[in-house]
Image (cartoon, rainbow, N blue to C red):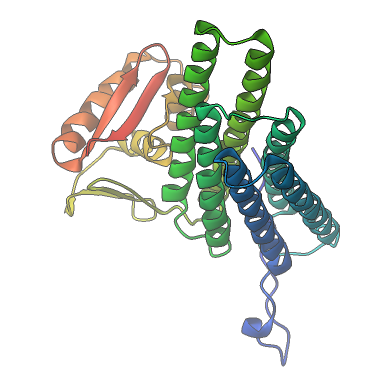
Length: 322
């Protein structure tokens, strides 16, 4: 896991106001935001081509220019990180995010290139759907990175990225099944399978970014309040409320709920729950986790608008019921 926090900044010297000093990594944050705007512009151009609103050859040229622009932004960001400084997130956080954002932009450019080089005339509907998912993901990325500067509550945005990645998986799976079940020419099968997989990989990288952002938020203290339905967890006060009323939880119940809320809608493995809540040296009965899950269900599900789902052989997932 990345070490995302650097040392605390020194106090302002005599005659200097701390408020007058520039925020740590202000330029790096600005460059990250520029990267996300570039990705969104490229995704918009790609969807315009997929939907037949612009010629694919022109779309590729535009996306290629945007990809070069993104490369230049990434170089500027890596160069800026060479200068040592104190305060704010550690440089590794920016490097990880920059690399993943560059991967998303590369996926958009690769898809546009294949559409143009293959001289596509009739676009597969699944490719249009995947392109729209990539575009929606790009918009969420832009919002999330903008919110990151103030360590605001990013979890609604990262959950949206997880949801979109799941949609991308479903569309790709259905597309491949339809390609091999029909009478498509083998050349078309290979071509569209390649294009659809590239687009889906773009949503995978968006989910990777969501994971980095969630870690960033937790380690900078920006994730002190987690909300799902009527359930509100306050990390600092070690308090849980359901529908505004306090609900007493044991320390272990609180720890399990904290992990499930952080990864709402995603499966948290049994091994991770046991390791992080009970400790790495726990060798007791694994069924104790199931017991605590049962207690949480009784305390939360009736009025909380959530349900805790057991995923056989893997772990547990917290979903909204509405």
